[in-house]
Image (cartoon, rainbow, N blue to C red; front, side, top):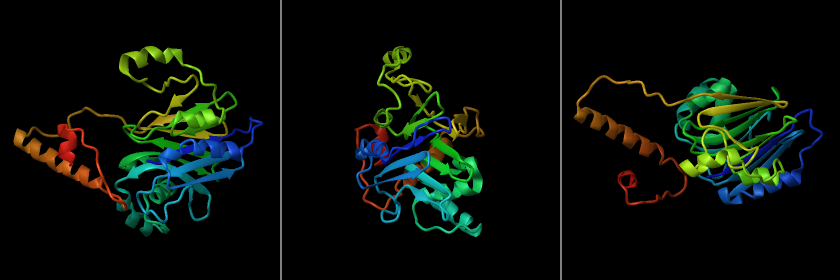
Length: 275
């Protein structure tokens, strides 16, 4: 699973990164990553990470840096196709220190910038601090499997985390109900768009990324569902066979792990087919 959290303070703010607060933000999501944890502080930027070790168990500690430590990443998720890019990146001069997908995301960001998200197949929520550009880049996977919540206050400060409780630990907001979201919650058993039940807390939408620079915030969509027909007319038998191959490939991709795997069975046709 893993959990991430962080603080980015603008030059307009008189606040400084408080290490104790950052550690409390990280500790409150200990359950998301009981195997390891770490924090990073760079002037007015602070990151926290809790790790559940799945890939390259021995060498995937976070926060993780590039070679000259000008960029640092914290990440929650799993990139199923990360190994596909290693040869390409090594040919361009990249040197890998680990075999984990975290490092591949960082290398892809160095090579392609924000377009790196278009190459990632998997589930993810990650944050990268670019010390040279003084920019914070946060992205969430296409279908929103991994959560990411944030508060952007009046001074331009940004607080973010895998769970809202990290934002409460940072005193980024007061725990007040967002009454505007209640009708949506009651009708649909969840809030839609970027609203949450906490006043002042936003959700980074699936298929979107966020760029923060000294208090200024920009959010962009990088993916959406496309319902346009993509295939020629085929027989039912051909469609079934095509689906079968795609299904097998999808399951195989998700078996990527350096630890034993298990699964939950609900008794339905979907989990049974996966098993």
